[in-house]
Image 1 (tube, helix red, strand yellow):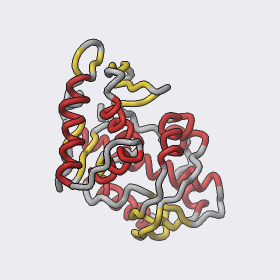
Image 2 (tube, one colour):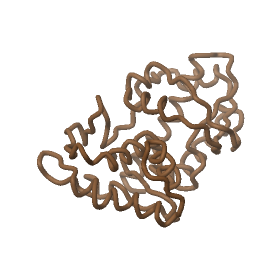
Image 3 (cartoon, one colour):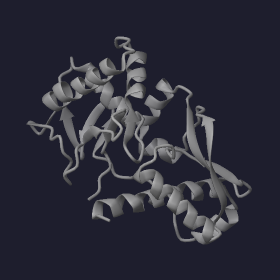
Length: 245
């Protein structure tokens, strides 16, 4: 496994441990929770399931299974809101219920707390991102990204990518298109036209007009990955926004 792959694997483990610990500390009588972003069969999915299997073997969790449920609007905890207030505001304003596949994890809170006695959940939160938002502005690795004010279309796409960001970075064209239409952009239903307008907005808009320190934004991340690339099945995009070094 590459160093980048190892880094992402460790971050996924931390994310699962953190979720379990926060739930156990809030309610010692709780016996299960749902882990989202389990529905895309890829590296993220495989790593998550593999780690859950290892936790089950060690007795930390009782069992887990994949279940389909409808996403409901939920309050984030204070730490999450403090960490990413822009995403919280956008989530509240643009939330729409949808069916997704989750991992339903059954556990004993006391076993979780006993198995990870020296881990503070606050320390495991916060996978580092390349692009972030603050007060309506975008930043690339902490540096302000300059975009023409009249280029709202690809600004909206970037907002959608950030608001729907998953650990594996994948988002379907249909999801992006639905969010664009909610924001008042032209209604399009033809799959080819949907793909074309999203790709054109990114290639001929975002990557052409966005600058950082006076230089056009690089299509590749510092570690050589494409910042935004096509999904393997051609049905969406992969937003490689997790910093791996």
